[in-house]
Image 1 (cartoon, helix red, strand yellow):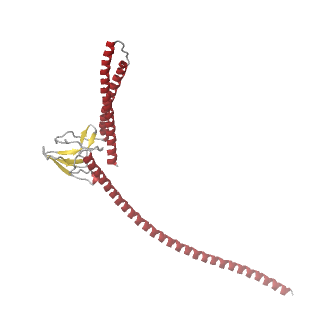
Image 2 (cartoon, rainbow, N blue to C red; image 1 turned 135 degrees about the vertical axis):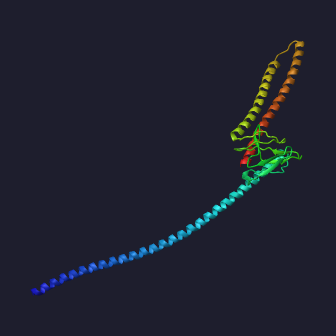
Image 3 (cartoon, rainbow, N blue to C red; image 1 turned 30 degrees about the horizontal axis):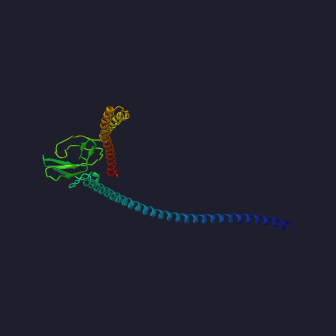
Length: 283
């Protein structure tokens, strides 16, 4: 009986050990299965990421090709826009020459930004060959530098430079309008041009102010005389005569005041016209 009990205990111990072993093996199998599943999942994800990477590279290549095409299209459009601006600019210059200066442009001068042009104009009066490079055409006027078109006059004896206001950072003055003689030579800059125009406007303004002062002074003086009461007949007659002279003087001064207003309007129109032409040229 005791032996049977002892064997039973041994069997129970062995059974417990085997159960532990089975549990351990099951855990090992589950771990291996987990590892296998994890590896398979990671391999699948890796393959998927590689495919996505390949697709992204293809998309990037397509985008780069599109960017290259767009950059090329932008360059073409900018070039076309430049041509349109140049044509508009040139058309405006010719319009100004015809409508304002009553000139018919025969030879056109295109600055460098209008595709460039090297022009040899010949002064027949004194056989001076003129080589035009860039913005090297120009001459000084009280209002600044005026350049743009070369117009051959009706007579074959001279070449005339049609005048347009144009602000250039640098220009060389070296020719006359009709005589062909050298006027000046040197480098002009925008501040000097603006200063020249400002001096012109100031000179006009001084003339206007002087006329205004004269008119106002004489009107005040006449007003003081005009209110005098003449009582005696001879004094009245003399006063009427003086009043007639004063009224004539007032009419004259009013005429001068009207001319003054016209001069003001002329200056304003000159300023506005210059600004408009510059805006059209620069725009």
